[in-house]
Length: 314
Image (cartoon, rainbow, N blue to C red):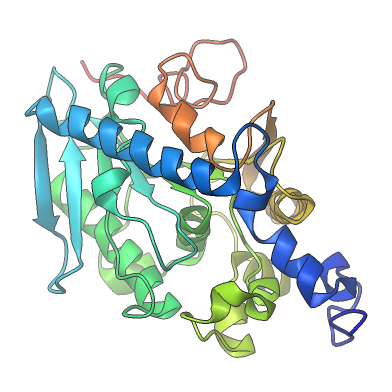
């Protein structure tokens, strides 16, 4: 088989790839530059576990808080030293191709952000095969509604996701908040090495536990939905930062750049950043560092998660 063939997206580069090449493009561990694939995954897990243990050891947290009725619908909240009624909140959704990962090993950015007066929320959701994509999107939506209702005086809710988590965060651009009875105070999105068009993933082994159909993929693809039915920004001032690691695969680069372009054409306040000399996993490891481009906020025009984009608590 020379490629994946025609159809309405026959112009997309992935359509011209063999199944083997597409598998390679959507296997981030094959693109690491400093470690072997298995070692990179082990290191990623170890750093996440250690960062989470450090964050939990401070005692300034609420763990396993239910945001819904489901067993997997829990979140952790980490507070800065000076707690006030009006904190900015960073809500993080982990990656793992919608089938692995856990909030219990995802508190990478807690220490540098709480040091700047930002509360951090790490959200769990039901991964496949237990959860479907529709359920995950619904759970993520529920978690944001919960944070807004619990902390109505917040100084802004900022969504951050890595890989599959970036996809889930991006789907919140399409959420029907009126239906939920609350409009969250969303001030920014930080999308790190995400997937925004799910159709290519259907043709890889990653789809085995997901069982995604074309209809599922389109319904849950922010790129496809924003391109076919443009949605106007609720808050024109809400900033969306789309980032990708320099050593991410060409398909991850294409996905990020095209999603950024779709956002700009739709009138969203979006920017794009290629993170220098990091691969898919190092972008997340480096969130544990207070002086990293995504966690610090005083480096001039650097588009970080820190206080240049979030107000500090008083």
